[in-house]
Every structure is written in C-alpha cells, then in structure tokens.
Image 1: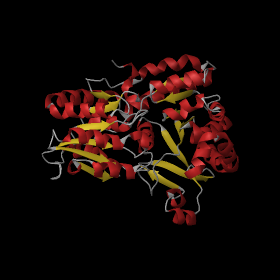
Image 2: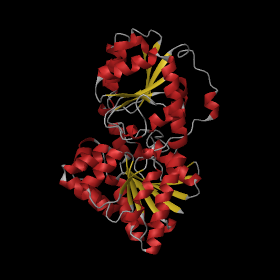
Image 3: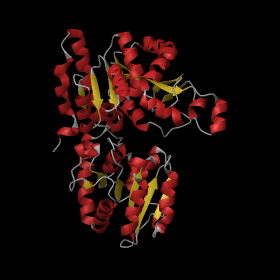
Image 4: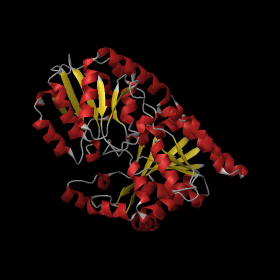
Amino acid sequence: MKILFFGVHFPRPNNQTIGTWALSQVVALRDAGHEVKVVSPVPAIPVFITKVLRRGTSAVCPSSHTWNGIEVEYVRWPVYPVGPLAKWLRERPGLFVKLAWKLSKGKFLPIAEQFAPDIVFAHHGQLSGFVAAEVARRLAVPFFITEHNFNDIESCAKSAPRRRHYAEATRGISNWIAVANRMRNAMTEIFPGVPAVTVHNGAELIPKELRANPRPPNLSGRLVVLCVTFFYKRKNVPLLVESFDRIAGRHPNALLVIAGDGEDRSAVAAAAERAKHRTQIMLRGALGHREVLQHMLWCDVFAHIGVNEPFATVFSEAMMAGKPVIFSADGGITDVVVDGSHGLKVLPGDGESAAGAMDRLLSDAALRSRLGSAAANLANSELTWAKNAENMTGFFEAALRSRNSAIPLAGITELSTQSPSRLP
C-alpha cells in the first residue's frame, strides 16, 4: 500500500540526530513492502534570524532529501516551537496550528494529491498529526497518529484548549496509537470513543560488523555504565551522575559514559565536575546513531533513569546488544521489561534506588550476563522495527478493509494483541 507519513521530528540533512526513530520506522514499513513518502513540516525561519540566535537548522534545511530510498519533502510553515512561543503553542495549540494549516495547506495538499496514498500516518497529534488528519479527510483515506509523550496526552485532562485541539486532530481517526499502555489508558479516559491501541516502538538490529570492533583503550578493562539521552530535566542525567558517584568508590574500575546534549547540558556538566569520582565519569557529547549502537556493544550496563519516559528506543537498542537495563518504574518500557529478568527497576527520581541498582549489577557478573541474555532474546524477537511494521500493517489493512466494506472500526482493536504488551 502507499503510505504518506507526516513528522515534525524527522532527520534533516543538516541535523541528523533529530527523529532518527521516525526514519527507522518508515524504512521498516518500506522494507515490509509498502511505498512510503514523508512530509516533514519545518519552521519557516529566515536565515538572518538563525544567525542572530545561533540556532535554527530549519532555515537552511533543503526542500527535499532522500534517506535510504525514502523521499522526504521538508515543507516550511509558520509554527515556531521555540522560546516563549513554545509555551504559548503548548497552552493553546489550536490557535496557532489551525492558522498555520490555513496558510500552508496549499503546500501540503498538492504533495498528498500527487502521491495519492492509501493510508496517512503521522507522529504527534499536536503538530504533524493535525496536518495529517486534515489531509486524510480531504482525500477520504484512513489515517493514524502515534503519540510519543505522556505529558502531551495527560495534560489534556486539565487543559480544555489542548483537549479541544486533540479532539479535532483525532476526529474520524482509524486508530490512535500509543507507544505504552499507560498512554493508551490516558487516551481512553480523556477521549472516550476514540479508538486507542498500543503498538510499542522498535529498534534497529545491531550491525554484525560493529560486534567485531574491540573496545578502545580508554574503555579497555573497565566496567562501563552507559547512558544515551537528550539532556532535558525529566531525563534526570545529573541525578544519574550523583547516583553513580555514591557507589563509584566501591568499583574503581567502573566508568560512567554519558552520550547526549540538550538544554540541561550545563547541569550535567556541573554534576560531573562536582563528583568526588569525576575521573570515572566521561561525557561524550552527542553521538551519531551508529556510534550509539557501537557504545551499546562496548558497555556492560545501560542506565536511563528519566521519569515519564514513554518507550525510549535506546532501551531496546541496549537490550539488542545483550545488556541489562536500569529503568524507572513509571516508564513505558515496563510494559515489556520485567524487573529482575531483563534489568533492574528503580523508583522515579530516587537517587538511592538508582545507586543501588548500579551497585548490584557492577558487583555481579553472573547477574549481568543472565539479565543481558534475556534482554537480548526479548528485544531481538519482539522489539524490532520490523515487528513494529508488522503490527502497524495489521491496523492499516484492517482500516482499508473496513473502509471498503463499511464495517465499523471498533471491532479491530483486538489486533493490539499482536503488540509485545501481552508478553509475560
């Protein structure tokens, strides 16, 4: 089938770290036999503004690019999710997005009409999902939106403007996709009647050639705890540093390696500088995706203790590399990962709990091996993008059958049993 995908979080030729999971998913859909085209709305920022602010890769983003055979159209529109505008956009998204759609539909609709999709699919209802819904309704084809953030949905319970915006974006939707069961439950509670289902994110398989690369000298002989994440406050990276510092003295050959960047970078750097065992902490900065996968293979433990983490693909990648994971109890990964079987669960925002989990894994090679092996079996069988594409295809095909036979879509939600959420 022909799938038209909309995503604001999608790699750009001049910013290849944004939305890598979205590219991986559409490539998996293509590899599953579908024809996929991508439309990525980007802020229409003048070049001179980016020079003044020293940020804004959308200003010099080309209008089109091909990634792994996937054609992407980068469409400029007047939505600016930065600074105070981001706060206003979050509080009253409909006010800004509806106006942006009216001003930009002349760009989006011709692309869609020329491609003539069978299915329209998008990530994030607030921005690209709203555009996808408008396009799909114009073309009279089924559409789907996947959400990737707990707060995007849960905040609608207390915000009438946000609730109205998402209600409009999901009007007539075939299925509203959650990446975690907690998210799906919130969708069902706040938006009763909207067909919400869970389809977990996947991850790319670890390339065989990376497995043959030996550790570099600075990691040789060390017990490596790895964290890969964007530096936002809810990611709790400074807390991870402090937690590791608590137990580093008992493990003089241990090394905490942190890869990432973001708005909280100064707090992360300050925590590392304050650490008593700062020589056992390494900040690598932002890494490319292939470098991340390589570090997954080189580490002994993967730790990510951010709160409200929906279903981070880094967990699946670490598990595919055969590593035990340390994760917060409130995250979507708890749908599939079992505490004591694939990794260790910690209390959200609790440094002592995180320190205890790292101490336990660093102290017990047999435990690391057992949990890592089980994690690899789970990830490589159920948490791949190929599995995700298989699950999504089931929903797409059901929507097309329903459209052609006029059978109500409510009956197809049982397809969610294909999701790994039913794993023991």
